[in-house]
Length: 532
Image (tube, rainbow, N blue to C red; front, side, top):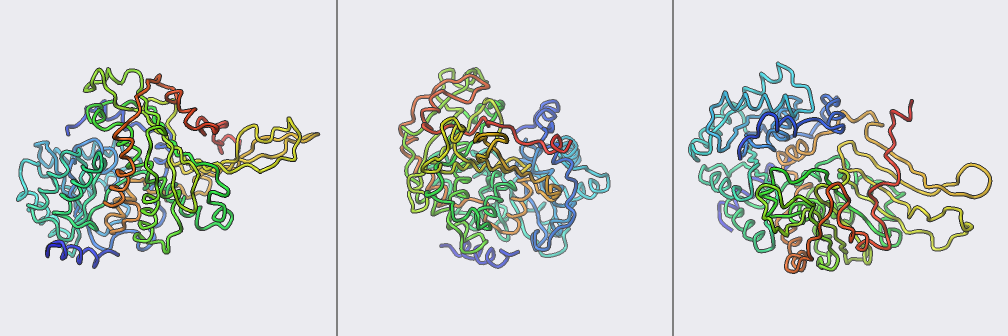
């Protein structure tokens, strides 16, 4: 280990507690608030910021890709909220991108992004204060100009500060940004946030990690997965380990199978050129669905702190059996090959469903079914736990018991944070007829929906604090690529499916004798309608 890296690791340990722009029309279309977003828009600011939530030190944020789509939709609105709500004890932002624009133009672009994409009201006073913390350096200005801007931001804070480098750039540009930070001498007192994908196979993941470690120590690197930043994903930990009702039955003796289902209605759209070299498995499963699987399947950590939780997540990855091609269905929606930038004979999957196993004492023999894809019938994000049915029924034929499948515990991973427990109960009236009933809960039922942070906001805040709980490690990523080798070396053929369907018909053979949880047999309860 070099002296420089050792020094960076010591410093990190000391303070651990502590592309081009789219058109306006297209931006408004992408930023248009869905029902879920509109609900978030009614959140307003949190009532009270708990002590210790934010970082100990003021932050200088270097945002690469500052004029890109992710920055406009999520990162800049998120930084605005964290700053204006008082989560960060001082913040300066230095935007970096390929666009050769001046500071006033950049500030105007940020103001437009907040107006179009922020889920919270942007007051004039808050915007005036936020505009003053913004600076901009075109990429062409080089490392020296970037260092000058960062040093000016640190002087403006007038106290000890930390640096957060966010790489909102394509994968092929990430290492160039890392090298620029190294050449600018901006590694000390720094943390770096990286977007997926983290390689496309085991060899590329190892190469990427090796090159990153030439500049940054591992504990300075935060590989982001916005799925784990969502409130309901973290609620899985509370639900599993804080309740005596469910903790004893969270194992192979009581659970029949698990489904993690993330269908999307959108097409690949403007990402077609990127997607053509990635596909659904690399884009979604390794970086998102496997991470959710780890939260669902992990053993109880010894403490609610990053190293303990990270160790238990890695145990899950280490216990996963290789993904076999026979347990995978790959699909492609009709019309994908007509997208701009796509090979007319493309075999890239826009859909994938797979069965995997965790070979340990808790989960031996329990299948985990994962599904995700583009242009599907609904946009959902669920984890569904199917419990084993009773070994013998005392109810007469025709009573309805078992007719609607096993009991399910379902987590909705949308920001609205809903849970449902389905079970059989007696239908009112004479005789013994059973119906499937459900208990449902939504975060807004508690009156605390205003305290929910958007996923990127939470993860940015955690990175500023040096909290790795919701981030993935180098060894974790490399292990996931390792179990994926059989699939990547011998992928099954791509099967076409109609846009607006649930994927290729062969997905039903994959999950048999079970059935996919989606589409639901009943809609989520509407509390407003129920109250009426």
